[in-house]
Length: 335
Image (cartoon, rainbow, N blue to C red; front, side, top):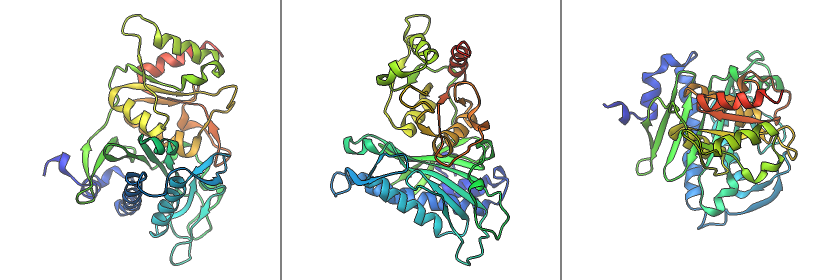
C-alpha cells in the first residue's frame, strides 16, 4: 500500500515507535478525537439547514458569546473522550473549570489530560468560512489512582506528548504531531475514514504571507507596527501578501502549506494578548516547531512558558523560521 493511501489507524500502528509511551493509548485518544471530529463535521456541513446558527445566549469564561456550534462541539468532544478510559481530565475553552474524569472503574487510573478549543473561529460559521478544533495532550503529573489536579494542566508546552487540529473546510483534515513530525489526514466522507494525504508537513524555506488583524493596527506595540510596515514595503521579495481569515486553525494551516507568519500581539485593547496559551498557542506552537518553524510571544519561545491559570492569554507569533527571525529582530529593538 502506498504511504499516501494509509488510513489513520494504519499510520499509527506502523509508526508506533514515534510515540514514546503506548501505541494503544495514542490510538484510543486519536480514535476519540476522530469520532468527535466526524460528528462535528456533519453538523458544520448542514449548519445552514438546521437551527444551529448564531449565539446560544450564554457567555463562556472569557466573556465571549457562545455560538450554538461551540456548545455542540464541546459536548461532542467531551463525551467522546469520557467514553474511553484514557483521559483523566479535560480543559475546554467553553468551561470555566477543568473537568475531572474518574474512569469507568472510578479508580482515577487514566494517564492523560486533554486541553482543547472545541470550535476555533466559530463566528465564521454563519458566513461559511473554515473553522477548526485544536487539541493538546499531556501525561498527568499527579500519581495514578488520585484525582486530577490543576497542576496536571498547568504544564509548559514543551511537555506535550501530542497536539493537533481538525480543520472543517472544503475538505475535513486531521493534522497532528507526537513529536516526530507533522502529518495530515483527509476525511473521505463516503466511507468515514481519514487517509494520509499530507505526510511530513513542513513550512517552505521562504514565506511570503503575513496574517494579522490590521483593523487593530493602531493598538499594536510599535515593534509590531514596524514589522508590518516591513512586510508591506516594496523591496527585494516584498511586499508580502496579507491573508487573514480570523480562525487560528485556518490561518496557520494555510501558512504552514504556503509559507507565512501569523501575528496576534498584545495591544492596548488586550494587554496580555487574546489567544489562550494552553489550548491555542501551545498546540499550534508544537506543530509549528515540528514543521520546521518557530513560535514565540515575540521575545521567548512559547513552549517554554510556564502557565499560571488554565485560561491564561498570551501574545502569539508563529510561522516560517526566516520570517520569525526577522520579527524577533524588530521586537528586540523595543526591549
